[in-house]
Length: 111
Length: 117
Image 1 (cartoon, rainbow over the protein chains, first blue to last red):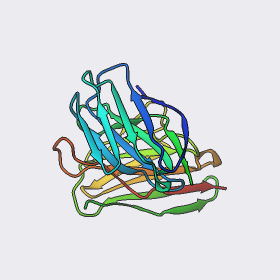
Image 2 (image 1 turned 135 degrees about the vertical axis):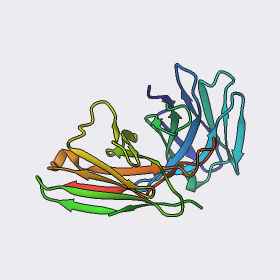
Image 3 (image 1 turned 180 degrees about the vertical axis):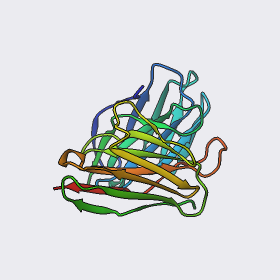
């Protein structure tokens, strides 16, 4: 049931772009993206509910494919503050927000 | 915005003792809260679903007698780690969501670091 995230780790220079993928063998009710910095709680980025949906938050955006089995998080013109571990959480409770998280993608942005 | 608060943030306890962690929704009511555990450099692992006024639902492999969950009110859930051992040392974090409408943000508490010595 755990979604598969890729890549496991990404190293970027400031200003570069990255894509993080999250996939499941079954259609998902929703996908939630979070960023977590070391020693801190996860911070909510966005939620996708509908197949084909795309939404953005500043320079961070995400998509949910039509079959609702894959989501991608796009980080453009990365900043140092983007460093952290990104998790996708998939709702396995049909809307009651019982989330199962992927293994995470560690992103390091260097000057 | 909605805030979920956890207490304590850090706790060190002796092996064999019990530790209680509180999760509060500060400005909304939450009939359901979730408890997660996270080991260093690993993902968040769902432990149990805390239901107000009824028994918690535990995930497979999580010992219900060791991790006692009480959801006594619409704004408070507690996790008690009983007879703690060093292998229980971890980051414990709760989550809750205001309202039932789709698309509502799920808020996480700040997390609680437990160290068992």
